[in-house]
Length: 178
Image (cartoon, rainbow, N blue to C red; front, side, top):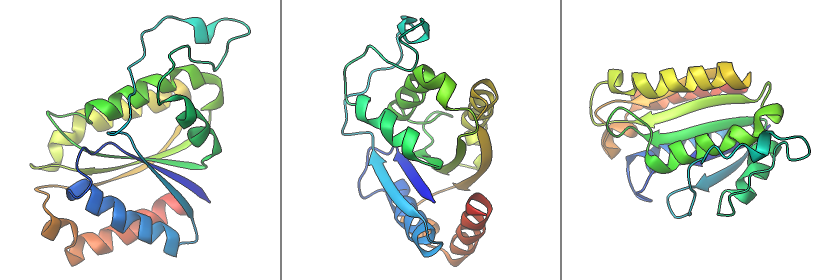
């Protein structure tokens, strides 16, 4: 299975990066081909709702020329898309939200796309509820298949690497790849 992990963390050595490292290893152990894309070092504007991508002859083509252009193909090629982001102020990071907005031009090709979430946060899991709720709405609108989410509350590297979360991560991988 081809899996794209979309990393929205600004810290290459932070808690979400540690989670992505563990998740990627678990996916590879399950026989998946994993492609991790880091958003924070890219220039990706949010959707400006110009509507060109929805006009006959332009379906699926975004007019904004930035670092998002090659990521449309990454999304298209993946059988499973995992959005991995820390939760800041009850939401995904700004670069993650811009990435998600820009998927609008892919409306027709997202039908049935499988998606899962992996998140870290400095508080209880409830702070991710807005982000998860928004993703559920997005999946309903685009006819995507929401599989599951994995969250590490009160995250630090010790917490991310705790045996409890290692076991939960194995279960998560089994749920989203099975």
